[in-house]
Image (cartoon, rainbow, N blue to C red; front, side, top):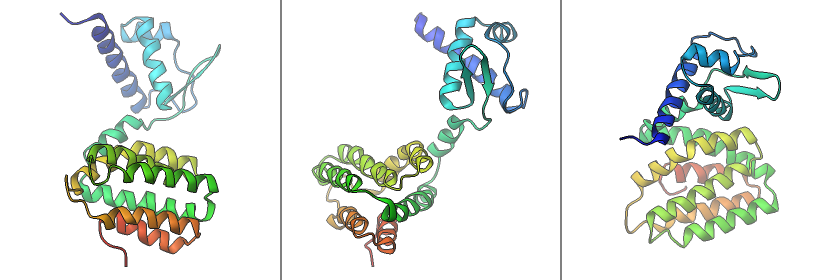
Length: 221
């Protein structure tokens, strides 16, 4: 017999599906105040608690803005969960193309904007990932994701940083597919070190070149 938690989760999921469908169909205009929780509960045929939980999730994803004492307003129509589903099914080449767009642009900005703290955090992340590179692939990938997020963060563009957080799981999966379980080439890891050196020297062109080489899994020229 299913637990109460599973039943509640299922009801919330159903409420979310119905609300997202209405948002996608344009039932409410951007900036429009949404019906109250009691009104939505009656319309959807569910409890107010279920509506409240669904609205919290929509607020977390940015589709809805909850204004205390005033109600909920529609903020957007593009659901980030749809983007995540699309990213999970992308090919290796699609992942590479997207990484080039995000990471190469980010590293060029980072070469201009990086701080001493950014460099210190990048070198610390490198130290952690380097300790696992030739040994534990999963632990290396987890540490490498921290390095790449720090790299994008060094561009000091909050939108780029948030976009990369959504995309990082696709990057992690692509690494699992291109890195051998054993005998990983040292020159691939060395590209990370050279990228940080280029950032420290504020050498924008070299940093971009090294980043492209890393993404394409080839030596830099």
